[in-house]
Image 1 (cartoon, rainbow, N blue to C red):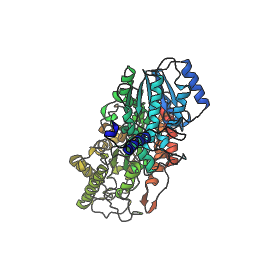
Image 2: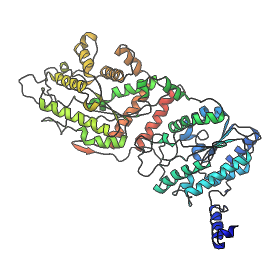
Image 3: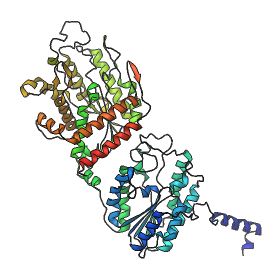
Image 4: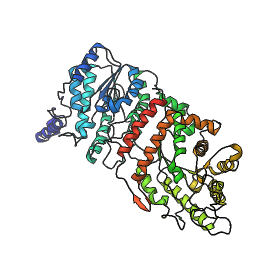
Length: 572
């Protein structure tokens, strides 16, 4: 019958093509089991043979680090306990393993349970694409074959087990920005092979016994770049990344397991938190401003209140205010150097920090301590508006904060009155009127469509009645830079403006309680460390240029402090 349709040569060609599509695996192939005996393997075989697990988590270091590693991976154990240990799971992940290594493990005892597990989750293949740390790499098609062999091995041993194949987690490319102390050097080919191989495995799903899911969207930002806050080394999720992945997995896994969706303390905390808090949690928040922001005590207070009141939510704040800075680009005669302009460093700050939310407080220096002037007002308006638009163009939510009040009474006779010639170091007696005009314009016009929080009006009101209220908002001789009570007032007003209402309590009482709390001390150290590291890393000019090439040491120390902060606020 075949001869009536095909010639002998054609038939032989078709047979040859068919054989080439399904070649017999050979050593070195992704679907050829490669012996990898280890003490961990022996322990896992013994565990499987002595206990009937309901869930097998099968994979490489990404699975291994979630629950079975210490050191820097210790925080991931909480993710394992919540989402997997609660389901009677065993961790069959191995650092450095490829499909061929996992295949050997499964064929040599790791499936020898008397009772079949309900579900086996397979996440494997990223190391098969690694052309930096391995002498051989595999193509997407070869990785598919290796994954297929793993799935078939599980099906043969446990035909009633539901198998969930996950698309391989993304690898970050060389151009990804990360502040982590270790990063993998992933070539463009490795990144693309990973992506293609992960998508190919979708063909394994029959949606009866074998299922497939791509959860990788949790690891990317809105602009398509990898979220290195979740995968800081460009390969492995950290605790936040593992939590994000586990939460995305929950609806699928619970359905396959026949149980309920498990919510972690973090998810429950997010559910309970007011909307304005959820809008900040987990976001990169950059705070810009002048010397008041560089002083930063109000930032420490904001972060302290957020972390204390929401112990299971994460807040990622970068305070990078710069002394003498303006938004208008103006500077006065006699100033030691031309005042820095935020526009000179704004793009560098956005690129370096990659903020989701930006708070900016300018104005104190923009009137250059002289009487109201239309040209200076115009320069301020243009500067603020252009700053807002540039931030928005980069996808950030922008909140403009009006300038704090200015207390001329603190300067004694060292002031410039109406009709007198201005000299540097002697501010105009009615300078607060200039700031009030700035604030009124910002509140009314909402420059660039930004949100606006009015700091000036409530501070001015209290400043006028400071003696009566016995509140020292400014230092003697300095009506520009607030005291601790002034910074606390600012922090409360900003949080209130964000919709995060704070208890109405006496400022002195609140400050006394805050400064004796060890949590505030840690948060303050964290804020100072980051500010002092990120300012020069971004780079700035105050007469001369200051630039630092490396932010990793700062972020290493900041991470260590954050671990202490988390333990304290979570009562661990």
